Amino acid sequence: MKKLLFVTLMVFGLAVNAQDIEFGAKSGLSFSNLNIKNAFGAQSFDSSTNFHFGGVVEFKLSEKFSVQPELLFSRQGNVAIFKGGTGVVMMDFEDKTRLDYLNVPVMLKYYFIKKISVEVGPQIGVLLSAKSIIDDKSIPGDTQEKRDIKDHIESIDFGVNFGVGSKLENGINFGLRYNLGVTDIVKSDENTLKNRVFQVFLGYNF
Image 1 (cartoon, helix red, strand yellow):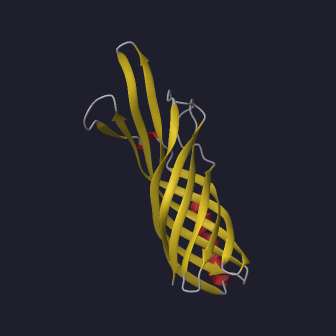
Image 2: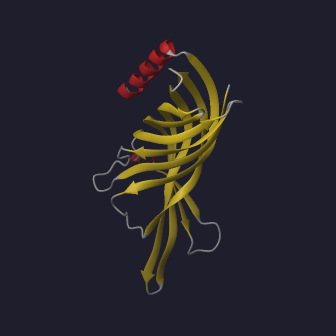
């Protein structure tokens, strides 16, 4: 809560000192994974393709610098693959972790070339839902089973974003961003999970 209050006060201060303010919206694909220190018994882990969308406000502090707070819905997670077994008992299933967040990144943007910027900034994420979707591939047919795991995941996630973007004269903008989660999001002393998300986005500033 203190971190959210700090971000709110910082954005308010920027609004007072900004030379110009632009509002916008963005959406795109997210390629997410989880940094795992304990394998949970899985043989391998794959990233999952998800999505994100939301609104942005860009406060222009000068010709070169601006600060851009955002409010984004972001679906994240990964896929754990379990295979193996001995004799007549074989194991072949996938466990997809699906985490839905309301993320608030605050990006410092530097326009090193006109309309092309690099960006860096902190991000706070509020967990909306957490599901484990198990698909047993050893059994024919639809065998998916969904489990609510929100009680096992931390409600707040903190990370750092790095990115690059381009904004055209007509307001259309696009770019790439990488989110490095620094919070251990699992409520366990035996395992460690941290979010890793690569985003490709397209947006429009009014």
